[in-house]
Image 1 (cartoon, one colour):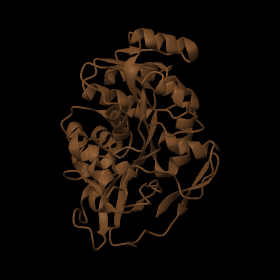
Image 2 (cartoon, rainbow, N blue to C red):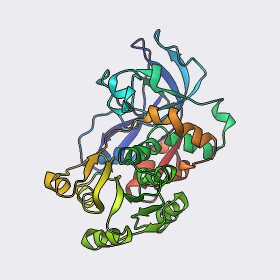
Image 3 (spheres, helix red, strand yellow):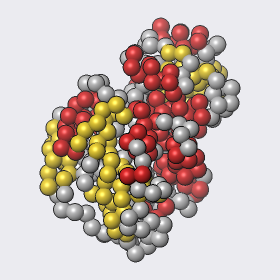
Amino acid sequence: MKYAEFEGAGQLTIKDYPLPKIEQPDDVILKVVRTCVCGSDLWAYRGFEEQGPENDGHEALGIVQAVGAEITTVKPGDFVIAPFTHGCGHCRACLAGFDGDCQNHTDNFSNGCQAEYIRFQHGQWALVKVPGQPSDYSEGMLKSLLTLADVMATGYHAARVANVQPGDSVIVLGDGAVGLCAIIAAKLRGATQIISTSRHPSRQALASEFGATINIAERGDEGIKKLIAASNGGADAVLECVGTELSTNESLKVGRPGAIIGRVGLPHGDKIDPSETFERNNSLAGGPASVTTYDKALLLKAVLDGKINPGKVFDGTFTLDQIEEAYQAMTDRQVIKSYIVL
């Protein structure tokens, strides 16, 4: 099978790998029909962190090919969303709605999904069945379904842990796929003012379409002053969807006293001074998204019913053979998120 192997900063190569096999009784083998590139995949590609040969791809739509002896929830032929998390569904964390931190699995996260087939571990509860087959859906709908493997659920996680309520003012830091999906999530939860922070006209336009009511493009002290002024003294909730030290520190300054910061940007080099939150009674929450919980509870239905259309974050389409081009297009900010058709 074709497999995207990471060879070093700025270099992925398609290699011929053996087909994956059932290794554990709760394994599921999937034929990948759609996958993509995530912003977090770019950290190794840009040379900011070490990476072995396994690609960082962790989002997929697939068709079940084979199941382990303990799998009863899906069968060969089923069309499924393969989340980047592998919650068990019955530990205390999963039952509390935090399957991104499942207590029963040390191997809770996907990788290697930029390939023709994958072995999905702990598939009994984590996989999300989609009615019908891929051929029953438009490409636009398939894109939206693919966001439910990560970015839409991650954006929703930011809004949920920040306790976004109807009527709230919300600031979203980040204009990548997760930030844009966080705007959708804030609107879904009833926020009436949603402030986006994009410096790119095309992303500003999509943010507005998704529900942003105003955009503040400035950064640094000027941006902070404008965000505070626009939200009448600071937002009720701040959704941090980048993960850099700059974005994290900004998130601590633009909420009103008592605001909650929903932090889902993968942290890279950020340091937090506890006094920043203590002096203003702010709370900092967030981490890996509860993908399966959100998909099964509301997001899959919202997509199928046409209530949300997060698939618009995919604005570049590639084949698996073009995987390096897909990474580079995101690195160069030519596209928001690269969509891979197999």
